[in-house]
Length: 391
Ligand SMILES: [Fe+2]
Image (cartoon, rainbow, N blue to C red; front, side, top):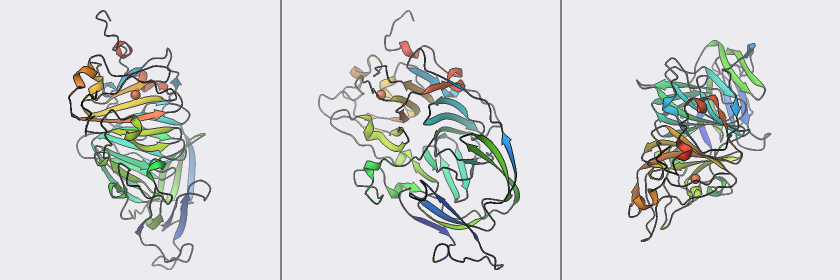
C-alpha cells in the first residue's frame, strides 16, 4: 500500500515496552515484504502470534489445468457453474484459469470462510454481487458489489457473506504482490495527478477487532501445499498496528475513466499491477469524440499477453451478438487476433456513452484452463466473428 495508516493503540516508539493492563508485554508482529526492504506493518497482539498447538496437512479440493489447445478464444459462463449452497469464498472457489504467476477463480458463497492465510502471494477479490465483511488481524473491511479488496500475502483473514444474497466474487491469487501501477505513483508512493484514482478512494481497516478465543484453526496455503494450524489464541487479538501494509478496498465506481478523441488503448484502464499481469477496469464512460471516431476497439493482437475479461455490468458494446452475458469471461489468448464482433464498429459510430462494467486481467504468460472453465465453456464462441449461418 502506498500510504501510512495507524489503527488502535500503539506505543510512541517501535520495539519498546508496550504493556497490557495486567502488566504483561503486548507481543509485536512485524509483517514485512521483500526481506525487510519494502512495505511493512507492526501489529501488537494480546497473545503470542507464534503459539500453535497443532499442525495438520490439509487436502483442498483437487484441481488441475490443461493448456488452451487447440488455441482458441474462449467464453466462460460463470453463472452456469452451479456450486450449490453451503459454500464459502475460500475453500469453495471454482478454479478457471491459471499460469505460474496467478490463478483466477470464481466463488459463490453463502457461508463464512474459515480463517485463512495465503502465504504464496496477494489476493485481489472483485465482488460482482452480494456483500462481505472481510475480517483480519488488521480489523474489518466492509465490501459490496463493485469493490476490489486486496489482501496482502499472509494476512490471516476470513470472508463473511453479509445479507440475503450470496456473495459472487472473481478471485485473482497472485504469486507476488498486487498494487497500483508504478507509473501513477510518486517516488514516495503518492498517487500522481494523472492517476485514475487516489488515496481518497481507498478504504482500510479503521479499528481493531479485539477477538478473544482459544484453539483457533487457520488454513494456510503455502507453495508446497496446505496446512491447518491450530493457534493457542485467536489471531484477531490485535489492539493496534501501524504501517503501510494492510488489506484495503477500492470501488470500481471510483475509477475515473481516461478518455480521448480516438480510441484509447487498454493501459488507460489499468488499475493494479501484479507479477507478470495487470488488472484493468472498464467503467461507464463518455466514449471517443473525434467526429470520425469509431468508439469500439480496433482488431488487435496483444502479442505478449493473454487477455481475460470478466463482464460484470452494463452492456459491453464490442461483444454484442457473441452470447456474452452478465458474469461471462472471455479469454483472448496471444497467438489470436481479436476484435469487436461483426457489425459492432458500424453500430458504435455516433454513440457518445458506453454503459459497461468489466474487469480485465492481462497475463504475460499463457493461461491454462482449469476444470471450472471447461465446465461452463460456451463452445461456439470461437466462431462468432465468422458469423456463418451453418454453425
Ligand atoms: Fe483485447
